[in-house]
Length: 150
Image (cartoon, rainbow, N blue to C red):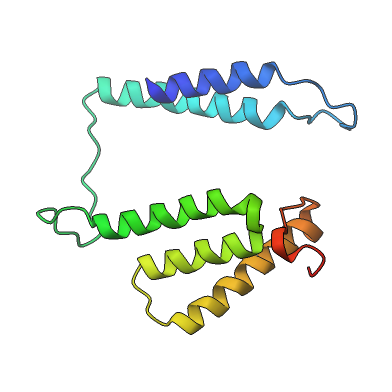
């Protein structure tokens, strides 16, 4: 039901989008959201039919996970902290620094202990994504403290 509601919401929301004055041809800003909404509705209907016929799906072979162990709350907390730090710092210090903190925090939380390598890779990734957004997509992420340097 959630999938059906999400599909209907996507369609209704997409129909309310304004037409782009710069759009050329039949594809405008409404096309993709409406298509995604229709696919969500279709999948919801197919799932309802499958469950009504007794389908329950097959159990996945999946990962070798011991379900008797609890969640790793330390890792979850560290990841949440890295994301929260990024969200709180991005406007103050800019994406290159907050992104580096996010990437380094993620590598640390997931168990990598090569600190120097992680810092170098984190800085390269955050500055690289900043340039990708700026030059490639024309989206200006905040440079923060590095404004004028980048």
